View 1 (cartoon, helix red, strand yellow):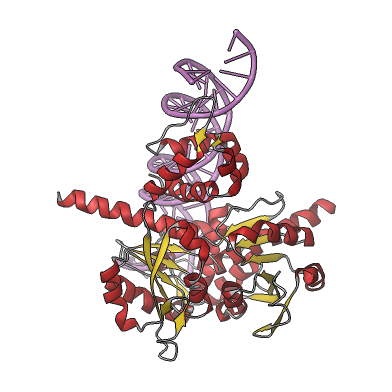
View 2 (tube, each protein chain N blue to C red):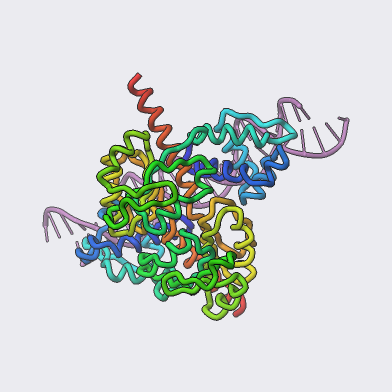
Length: 212
Length: 212
DNA sequence: TAGATTGTTAATCGATTAACAATC
DNA sequence: TAGATTGTTAATCGATTAACAATC
């Protein structure tokens, strides 16, 4: 399945858990597209990758489509993650209700700073990095979230990979190098801001040019 | 400039601020590509969009390229932002040293919760949403960061847009609807995790198939 | 039936990359 | 000079979308 499709499927799933589509019960590719800023053809094509069919002249059953999307994304059961970094960012994710709602389960919070270790974040006791491999093994964790400063991120990534995770969510503002078998997704905080800064500026330039 | 190019330019800029390329002074498209997981042709093509030329058989001057990238992205001067949501996530961004280092300046932190208002986050007094338009106007803020729960995100987006921002960084796990003139970048926390979950699972399936 | 909307094909569009002349 | 590496072209690749037959 093409990568852009996977990305949109995740959006579709989040969208279907919103109030509006759930109230309606059925949704057409047209409405889907309007709400997510896509074309209806893209939506239909994406859904055609799933083991799921819509109903001619009715659209898609919201509940059923949601289930199939979850199953396809591997989120029909809880997806176990660990969080490394117990600063504000790490703590924010640990207590993040929306993530739990969407199917992610945090199995541990870790930090290199001995002063933070043994403190609590919500229900989690912050652990040392030494405990990382055991937790990853015991819970079958396949995804690590990197919530440390840029300067520490690569070292943390290495430790997570050594401990056996297969995917990394990188919230640090730095490029990571990992073996090919490991997937990395950038959270795009700094990158996203830079992009916006560029968009905003070029829009401003266009406008002043239009005025002149 | 194509959107994928802008995205990579932001990565190039972050990469050039790393220790390694700065130590070297010069970098070739080949080395660039190897470190960022791209092809050298892509790097050269991307750089060709800039008002900047490399040196045949030497590569690119790291310092000069960094400056041109910053200018192109609009980050040669501080980019002003506001943060809405003073929970862990909002606070994390407010005190985030890497963002300041990369050229972003937080001009205010806001929250709807009256119990948080007037408290401090680093140097910022948390303000009510009523103060938002004034701050945005006075500082010429063009970017708003949404760090509130999914349920509140659309309302916050509306207020930011009304107050005049031209770009939104959305950290909430929900789809936003905004006027066409406003740019939105998703921080991809939940979306990124879903994507990883999917990648990890299909890799596991491939492997078990290979064994069988 | 008329209207709506699917699933799929083929056309279009745009991004990536291989290749290479230019040149330091 | 030989080696390295750029900037650019043209070819390739892949994703998006328009169009429409099928059908509820």
